[in-house]
Image (cartoon, rainbow over all chains, first blue to last red; front, side, top):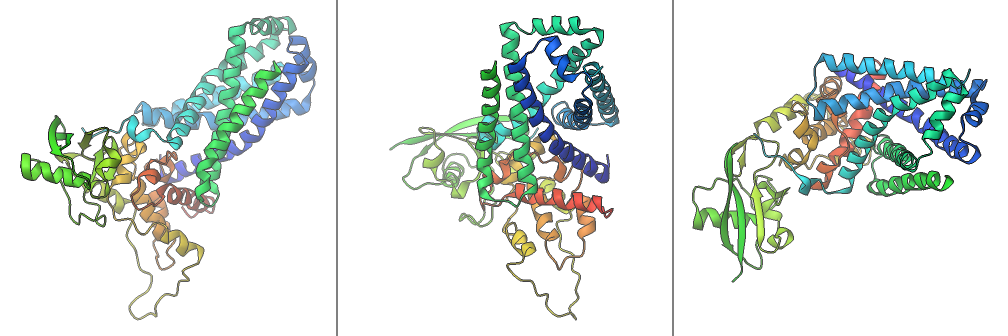
Amino acid sequence: MGAKSETWLWIAQRASAALLALCVLVHLLTIIYAVRHGLSGAAILERTRGNAAGLAFYSLYVLAIAVHAPIGLRTLCQEWLGWRNASLNWFMAAVAVALFAFGLRAAWAVFV
Amino acid sequence: MNMRNDYRSRNHPAWWAFLVHRLSGLALSIFLPFHFWALSQALQGEARLDGLLRWTEQPLVKFAEIVLVLLLAAHLTGGLRLLALEFLPWRDWQKSLLAFAAGAALAAGLAFALAL
Amino acid sequence: MDMLQVSVWRGAASGGYRTYEVPRQESQSVLDVVTYIQRSIDPTLAYRFACRVGMCGACAMTVNGVARWTCRTHVTKVAKGNAIQIAPLANLPVVKDLVTDMREFFDKWARARGQFVPSATRKDDFARVASDSPGRVAANAGIECIGCGVCYASCDVVSWNPDYLGPAALNRAWTLVNDVRDRARRERLAAVAGDAGCHACHTHLDCSERCPKSIAPTAAIAGLKRAVALAAWKGEL
């Protein structure tokens, strides 16, 4: 990949990291709240069903993950597996799409 | 081939911070698909989700959850440390950012564990 | 008299450690030890040194697994009991015994555009640069580098990524990026961006830990990341 593309990957990684910092903080607090106030299927769905703000939040969260994780994994594969050619980029793009799709599906599943 | 470095040159705090950050990121990436799958089971109705959640009541699973929360907190605090190192003007005290990061991560993990 | 058990790498890419017994002195550097072996025990030992007083960086070797200047490493600081292991610098091809081929190190320096490109001619007046201006302070933090290779030998990313330019080359590039008299900023930022450049640094801080001149290449590389990102954002990369 060229210098310009690599630079934009770096920018995307740091930007998604900053966004995730906020999302993870909210998520951790939510988890602790949920643990205290009921972890049964009914209790969770009662809080998430019809919660548009929650859906919006988790969609954004999933988008940030879909950007952040593959870029990080890509570096790991390059350095520790010696996998450096174009096929790695295609694979990671596929991982990004898969994470986004499955993540959105999960967010939707607890919304409807 | 060239001489390689071993643990003797790597045994310093910033290197451990890197390793924790990379391995926690890898572990979380592997965990996520399972997490998304589990939540998607709600599409098949509340009972299905409930059944899965009952499965997570087992002590071993609860322990794994604590580990996951610790990994997430560690990756977060380690990442914030990196953002500070890369974007803030360089100061020597930034080396002790690692201590703050580790402490914060531990605190988050404990908060989760104690909430159980 | 106490005898040091000194294990020294003999050979090139393939070879092994050979142990020598060296009389232990009260004031003795690791370079003294290597010199003793070559002069009094085994004249076939190959090693590099020049100034012997911590100015040239030629004597850098791996001592008990850590890259150091051997002329400035006191035996008492590194000896494990009476044992010392001495090897050539890591991440560089071994020519013979303790001597490495430094060409790749300096080639990468050139690839990072670590050369000053003047914007003025002899007909222009001197440039006036305030020594406390942020750019000059940033440059000054890195210009004492003497190219000894210790940071390069200590860096894991250099080990894992053969194309990585390395901390010294990137540090030099940063000093020039901050030099107001230089006019190759755009080409230099393009040269240090990417997988082989500043973006490959993961802040292990091995370089900053080991630099004998207390330079922090990690800080320089972080600066390059910011400068490159800004250039890309403005469409100047």
